[in-house]
Image 1 (cartoon, helix red, strand yellow):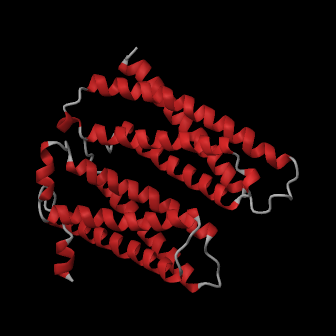
Image 2: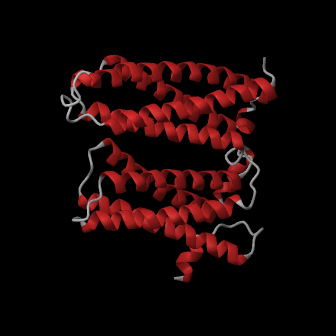
Length: 297
């Protein structure tokens, strides 16, 4: 058992052996319980619902991240990234917190949508996901206490990651609505609103990558700030338009007869609306931040 845990220990020796051992154990537990939840849900049967696909993706992602980080640290490959990656500790902390955020959503969604007491496998999957959630949160908090100084753990990085995460939830809810609602409850303009949110998600992820690779790409902070500022304005307009379209063409149709659309789910509609409003606030916050502090105007 000692050899197995040692294989999952990170190489940096700036911390005590006990802290390294603790982090190695946490990494191992993350992999074990995420894999257990993923295997149990596959054993139950592959889920075709968009919410089920999201849960499966999250558990698979939470297996891959600690495995990749562990292998890179065990082989000292992170040294090769030092030329263009400012802070490896910042990257690992950011990815761990991202996994914690994602697996919280997967645990809640799976527990609310898919778990019923007659299925032992579903309950075991939920328990495994809950344990993995706790482990990821403990690991993330412990890494955050080391105060890594990088983009992923900064306020800007955290907000960008949160925007991307919320956009994924919005698109999953929209897809679930489009899959199960009759065709007359999913007009073309509502698909266009989802397309706008998907474009904002792609650009936001691209901005995160560019901020991580500024050293390699020799990007000047002024140009990157200007690009982010212009994108924030476009994102605010896109989200405003998407919210208006979704509310006008989505909720309006329920007023005709609430008993016509049996398969329509108000939860999906509300999730898209609330998530889009939250992301709109985040993009507005970024825009005001650049106007006031960065002074790009």
